[in-house]
Amino acid sequence: TRPTTSARSEQHHLRKQHQREQDKSRTRSLNIAFCRLRSCLPEIPKDTKLTKIRTLRYAISYIRQLMDAVDDNRVPSVDQTSPKTSCVPSTPDGLVCSVVFLT
Image 1 (tube, one colour):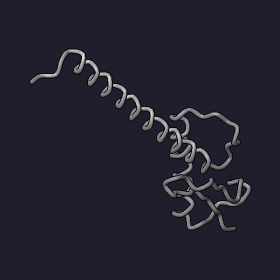
Image 2 (cartoon, helix red, strand yellow; image 1 turned 180 degrees about the vertical axis):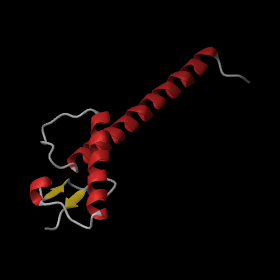
Image 3 (cartoon, one colour; image 1 turned 30 degrees about the vertical axis):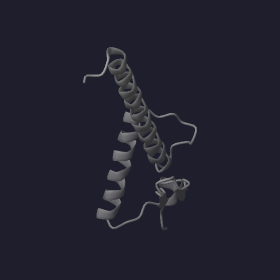
């Protein structure tokens, strides 16, 4: 037997509600990841609001600087990379972002 129209409507509503909850969860996870990425970037004040694209661009630039430093077999000075250590608390997934520059 086929479900009644009202039962199908209820199933549709529940599927939509579940999809919205999944979308919200994905959005929260993505926002947390961007927040953690921002906290790993030196020379950006904590209260500075960066868009996601600017965050990615800064991260790419920073990674390139680090790669250049490794290629040149040198370590950036503290003046170029303040703060010396940047850490964020552990997240529920156990990941911690920490950047330490040895001088």
